[in-house]
Length: 115
Image 1 (cartoon, rainbow, N blue to C red):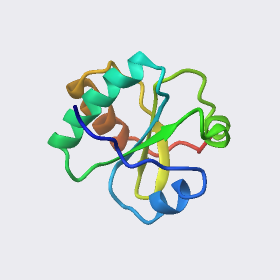
Image 2: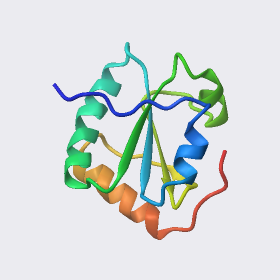
Image 3: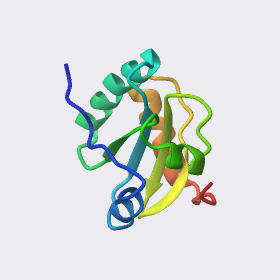
Image 4: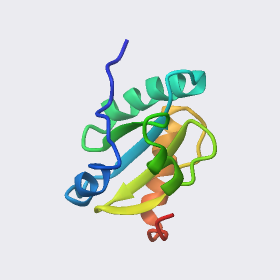
């Protein structure tokens, strides 16, 4: 079984992302969420194929402030940051190639307003 992605909290998310120019995926999850476990396995494949991308995990139960900030209504939820800025939500099937395509397409678009 794959390990955890680094966890982030509302206290470190913004400054850790701001300092990092790499494409960054922020993944909202919770231990009881089966779809989250599946997506986590898929994200490990994505990470193996894109070692330069950063992937962080946020436990939605522990981080209610971030859940509200990002308007997360269902889990799992995935958000893309690039060049230190919020880019957009990634809405894709839970397959490595689909997520890669969604991220690469999103990176070609201008960033959206952060929620």
